[in-house]
Image (cartoon, rainbow, N blue to C red; front, side, top):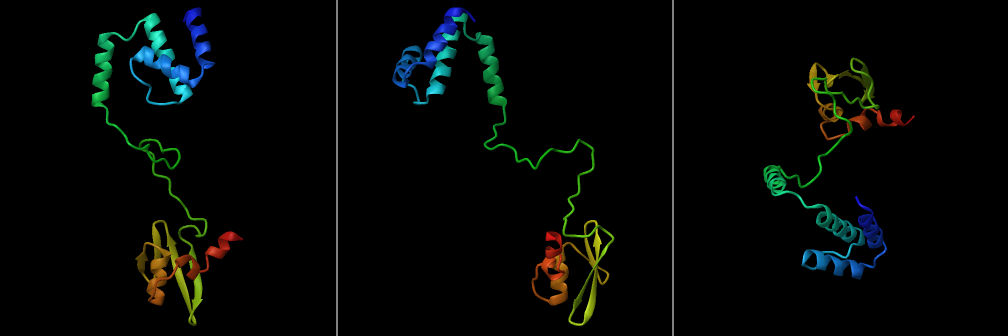
Length: 160
């Protein structure tokens, strides 16, 4: 960049928004779509630099148009739950802190009987049957929907 362009850029940063809008209209031949000062300064600076040092070649413009038309446009950013595991690496398992480790037994006294539920890596086992959640086990025992962590009194233990 030459000294003259740097001086013009410094002057643009001190210019009022109305004057920036007028300068934009002069350089681009249309009214600016915004009153945002920083945006106006950047666009005007780009145009001044393009006029002083040359714009993109026609070949570069065609290639940019090709890339833009081939691009899959995202309307929202990808959802991220933190860092992704390496390709081929086993998926990390999330262990609920309220539960004992797989292989452990959860016991509870209920209506005079001792209930035992075995914690599996991917669910629970009660009376030889597999269940996906503690709530499903509690429903099988009580016949009504119940929160499994509360039924087996695990929610309070995690807070201690």
